[in-house]
Image (cartoon, rainbow, N blue to C red; front, side):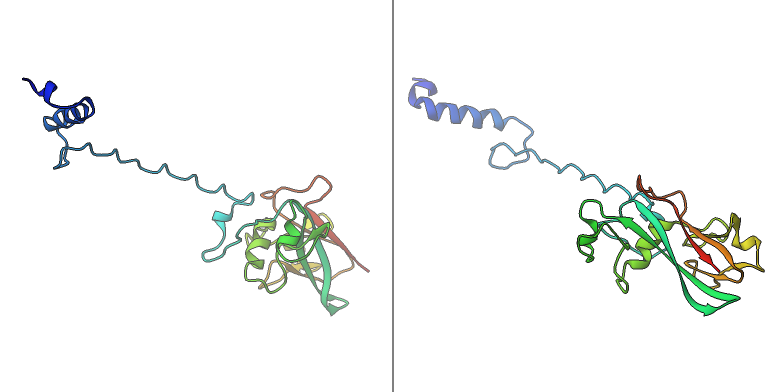
Length: 197
């Protein structure tokens, strides 16, 4: 009588599998097949923010949601008197995909990158404005008329400690312009202007 006659069909199939494994290079001591190891495929990294968030100064973060396209630079007189006004600027972005509501402003047509005092406000403003053409500092490039403020120290000057500020010394048109590194809304502009009279 042979082995095939002694074992029922189901047991024979199981024995056949076991016998087939005995002569293999399996590392399993019981002779059962070792399940294949399936490594997870690497998850794709998040795409960089449009302004290039990887280029922010060390320790600065503008997390999701990153600001949408720039609407314009908002400029106002911050302080001073005729002959020496401190002019302030900040980027305003369009409310795309509910961005303004997500960062705490509600359902406005446009808003700032983050509320005043938010720990990521400075970094998000940096992303939207980029670096000034003349100083290389984070913030807008300042113009008096069509000339860089840095070229007209008697009329206009970059603030010594903050590129979002400028010193307006003469009457005329002052402009703050974001760099080319961030998208501008279809109805937007890269610059903001202020007339001082």
